[in-house]
Amino acid sequence: MTSDTAAPAEAIPPAADRPELDALGQRVRTGLAWKAATQITAQITRTVMTIVLAHLLAPSAFGLAGMVLLFIGLIQLLADVGFSASLVQLPTLTEEDRSTAFWMGLGVAIVLFGASVALAPAVAAFYHAPRLRWMFVAVATGFITTALSTTQASLLWRRMDFRALEIRAMLSTIAAAAVGIGAAAAGLGTWSLILQANALSVTSMVAVWLLSPWKPRFVFSRQSLGRIAGFSSNVLFARFLDYGDRNADNLLIGRFLGSTALGIYSIGYSVIIIPFSRLADPIRNLITPALAALQGDVDAMRALWLRGVRAVASIVFPLMAGVIVVCPDFVEVVLGSRWKPATSIIQILAWVGLIQTVSFLTGAIYQSCNRSGLLLKVNAVAFALDLASFSVGLHWGIRGVAIAYALTNTVLLTPLRLIVVNRLLGYRLRSFASELRGVTEATVLMAASTLVVRELLEMHGIGAVGRLPICVVSGVVVYALVCRWREPRVLYELKRLRPSS
Image 1 (cartoon, rainbow, N blue to C red):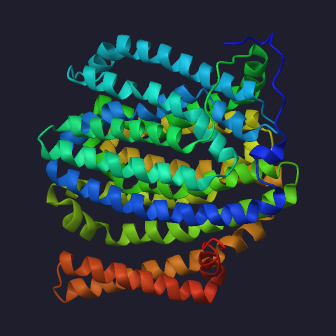
Image 2: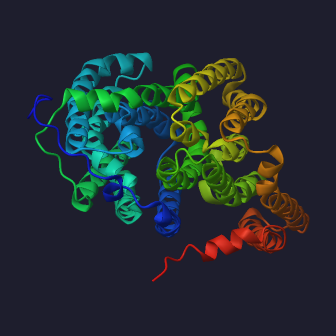
Image 3: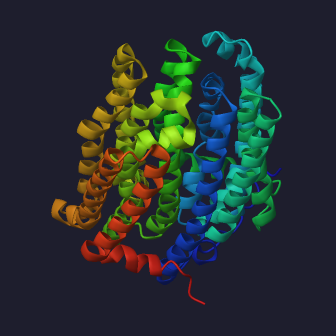
C-alpha cells in the first residue's frame, strides 16, 4: 500500500460521484420506486418468516437468540467506524479517501472480531447461559462481512444508485429468510435465528461486490484518514449512543427478567419496531444524500425534510394505529395463543413507532447542517433518559419497560428533537402541523372506524379469524378515502413513484 507521502490522487469532481442538483428530484422518485419494490418484497418475506418461526420456535428460543443478536447493530456500527457518513457527506472524494476508508475499516473489523472471540465467555457468563458463547462468536463474524461491504455501499448511496442498493437488499432478505426457516424446520432451534442473521450479512456483502463498480486499491493515506475521521468521529459516537438507546431495554430484560420475558418482548420488536425501521430507513436513506447535496440551501432542506416526514407518516401512522386496534386478533390468528402475553407489548411499541415517526429524520438534518457535535449531544441526552426509564420500568416487568419507553419518547425526546431541528431550519410549527394534518385526520378516522367495526363483529359472535381480515380491509378503504379527501398529496406522490421512461 502507498502511504500519505505518495502523490495525492486527483479529486473527482462532485458531478462524477454525486447527482446534479437538477436531477435530485428524479433520483429521489426513482429511488422511491425501487424502495417500494424492496419494501413490498422485504415485508412479505419478513412477515412470513416471523410467523413461521413463531410457530416453529418457543419464546425462550427467541429470547436466547435476542441476547446475542442485539449486538448486530453494534457490530455494524463499529465495523463502519462512522466512515459511511463522511463518504456520503464530503463535497469531494479522492481514490485515496475511498481506499483508505476500506482498508482502515477492514483492519478495525479484524481486531474487533478477535476481541469478540476473547470476550465470548464473558458474554455467556453475563447472561448465565454458557451455550451463548459460540453463538456470540458466530454473530461476531459480521464484523468482517460488514467491513467488506460498507465502503462500496456508501459510494452507491452517495451516487444515489438506489437500483443496486435495493437489488442487494432484496436478495439478502430472501436468502436470509430461506436459511432461517430451513434451519428451524431442521430442528436447529435458537441457532436458526443466528444462521438467518449471518446469511443476511454474507449475502449482502457478496451482492454489493457484484453490483458496485468500485473496487479497493492498495492505497492508504494518513492524510485521507484524518480528513474522513474528522467528520466521522462525532457521527460514530452519536450512532454508538443511538445503538445503546435502542438496545438497552433488550439487554436489561435479558439480564434481569430472563430469556422467556425477552422472547415475548422481542416478538413485539419483530412485529413493530423492526418493520418501522424498515419503512423509515429507506426514506431516510433517500433523503440523506439529497440533503447532503443541498447543504447550505436551508429553504430547500426544510421543504425536503417536511415532505419526507409527511411521506413516512402517511405509511406509518395508519399502520401503527391499525396494529393497536386489531392487535388481540392479530396475535391470536397469526402468532398463536402462546404469544398472548405479547399483545400489550406490541400495542405499546406501536405507539412508540407512531410517535417516533415525526422525528426520524432529525439526525440527517444535523449531519447535513454539519452539526455532528449537536447530533452527539442530542443522542447522549436520549440515551441517558431512555436508560433511566428502562431501569425504572424493570420493576413492573416487560410491560413496565415498554410503558416507560413510550412515555419518555412522547413527553421528552420527540419534542426535544423537533425543537432542535426547528432552530436549525427555522420552520414554523404551523407549517409542520399542516404537513401532518391530513394524514393525522385520516389515521384517526380509520382507527375509530376500525374499532367500531371490530366491536360490532365481536357483538355478533364473529371470531378473530373472521374479524381480522374484515377490520384490515375496512381500515385500508377508510384511510384511502379520507386521504383522497383530506390529503390528496399522498395519492399524487404515489403516482409519481413510477420512474419516467
